[in-house]
Amino acid sequence: MKKTAALLLAAMTVLTGCGGKSASQSESSAVSDSTSAADSAARDGDIVLTIGVVNGDSGNMNANGSVTKSYFWTPMQELVDRFNSEDNGIRIEIKNYAEMDEFKDFGYDDHGIFNGYSDDEMKTIDFQVAQDLINKKDIDIVGTNTFANSAKYEIFKRKGGFADLYEFMKDDHEVNADTLNRHILELSERDGKLYSIPIAYTARTLIGESQYVGTKRNWSIDEFIDSWNRMPAGSTVTWSSEAEGVYYDVLRANTTAFVDYVNCETHFDAPDFRKMLEFCKQFPSNMGVKNTDHINYTAPQLVKLTLLTGYGNAIISETDYTDYSRKYYRLRDGGYTLVGFPTSDGKGAFLSGAYGEWSIRANISKEKQEAAWKFLRELYTEDFQTESYAIRHESNNPQTGETFVNYDFMQGFPVNNAARKNIAQNMLSGKYDDATQILSIQGNEVTEENKLTLEQEDIDYIDEYIESIDRWEFPDTDRELFWIIEDEVLAYFHGEQDVDAVVDHVQNRANIWLSEQS
Image (cartoon, rainbow, N blue to C red):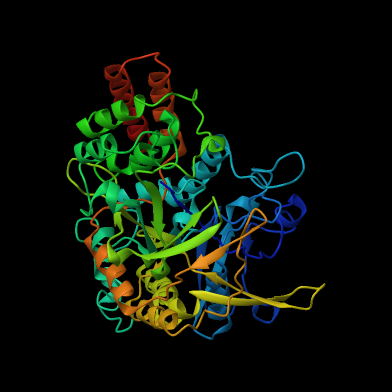
C-alpha cells in the first residue's frame, strides 16, 4: 500500500542582525531606550517602566543554522518605539540581562556564534533575574522572555508575584474578558485571577489517519495500544520503530500532564506514565538516541505530532515520496483524526501561549501598575493583533530579476476575538495568496493534486476543536526535568532497571527537583 508522509513547508524568515558575537556585544548598556534618536531623552515627570528581557524567540534560525540571539518579537519592539514617541507621560525601557557584562559571553561557541544557553548558564542568569524580582523594583513588566528558562516564569506566577489583570480590564472597553478569547483566559486563570495573558495560542496534539485511529478525538492508553496492535506489519509511530523515537513524540511530549506547577506536585507514579513506558519498551532501543536517520516516510503510520498554529492547518498536505506528488485533505472531512495524547482521562491535546505571556509586577505602586497596563493592553488590541499577524516582504532574485513575496506569519491564533475573525476573513479572501510557492523537496519538483482553498467550514472546525481542549501547557518544561526523566527512562530501555524502579526514581527525583524550584 502506498503511504504518504506529511510535508512541512516552513517559511524562511529573513532576520536583521546576525548570530555573531560582534553584533550582540555592540550594545553599550544592559538597559536600552528602545526609541528613535529623536525620542531618546526621557521627559521630565514621565513614569518610567522597565521590561526585563533575557530570552527571545530561540526558534529563529539564521541561514547558517545558528540560533539568533533575538530578545524581542519585532512587532512588540515597534510598539515600544511608537509608545515612547507619544506624549503619554509613560516611558518604556528594556533591561536586557543577556547584555550585562557578566552574561554577554554566555551561549557563544569558539567561532562567536550564539548557539543557545547551557543549563548552567540559564541557572546563573535566572538567579540574577529572581534576585531582582524578589529584592528590587527595577522590573515592572515581566514575561516568559524575562527568564532564560521560561519555566521559572510559571513558578513566580504561582507564588503570586504578578497583579490580577482582570482588575485593569474592568474599566477597559477595548481589551477585556469579552473582547479576548474567554476560553483561553479561563485556562490561564489561577483561583479566578488572571496573572498573565498570552499574545496568541497554539494547540499541540497527535494526528492519525482515521482508518487506523478511528474518528474519536481523544483516546485512552488502552485505545491507543489496541489501535497499534491492529496496524499492518512494519508500521511506525511518528515515523519511528525505535523506543526512543516513540518515547520522545508520544510520552515525553506529554510531560506537562505529569507536572502540576500550581500545586507543586509531580505525578510520574500515575498508571498512565507506567503503561506508556511499557509500550515504548516493546520497540528496540537505539541506545538513547532519537535517530532521525531511521525515519521511515513510506511505512504505514499510526500517529504523528502536529501543532495547530493557524487556520491553514485545517487543510492537510501529504507528499508521496515515491513520486513527489502532493495531495490535500480537509480535516473536517474525516479522513484524519486529531486524537490527542493517550491518557486515562481522555484529556488529549494541549493549548499553550505563543509569543510569550506578559504580566505586571504585584509589588510596585498602583500608579506604575496602571501605567504598565496602559502599555501592555496595546499588545491585545484588535488593530495590533491584526496588523502583526502577517508581515509582507518582497525580495528580488539578482540573476533573474524575479520578485519573490513571502510573509512572516504569527505562529498562533491571536487572543483578540475581532483580530482572529479579521485574519480568518483575510485568509478566505486570498489576501495572503501572493506568497511565492517553491514546490521542491531536496531538488525534486513536487506536483500538486486536488489543491484545496480554505472555507468558512474549515475555520469553524478549528475554532470548535480548540474550544474543546481544556488543558493549558505552561511555557516550557524545564530542561533539567527532562534530563532527570531521560536518565531513568533510557536506563530502562537499555535493560538496566525494571519499570517499577524507573517509575519510583523518576517520581522521587522530579518531586525533589520541583520542591527546589519553589
